[in-house]
Image (cartoon, rainbow, N blue to C red):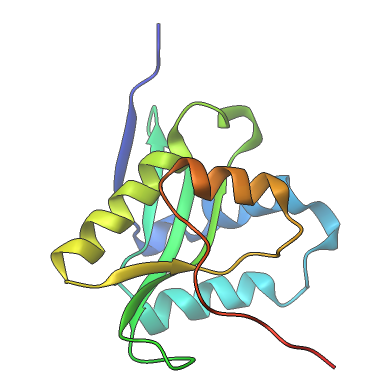
Length: 143
């Protein structure tokens, strides 16, 4: 029997669950400041476009994003800042459902959606392509 996935707006009570999922995904390599950044994102953008996925009342995935004004010479856009699905719940369509919830809200607000990923991250490229994203016109230069 397939477990029902519920996508809903994130609440402050979800912060610890989100940090637990990230710890399971990234392990000890995450910057020590990251848990504070998640909470800062919540307080700055709350309750903008932050979503969680629940299965059986447990938070198993999250997407943090917002709608921001013109950045990098772009129009006002919906930006996906971070997303994660607990390892034991991956490959079940949860990430796609989170992305769709975000995109639907952006569509209601009349803005396009953007996400920035590393050019060499084939796993994320495959995921974002599979949910309808394509390469945009922003390019990063470094020295």
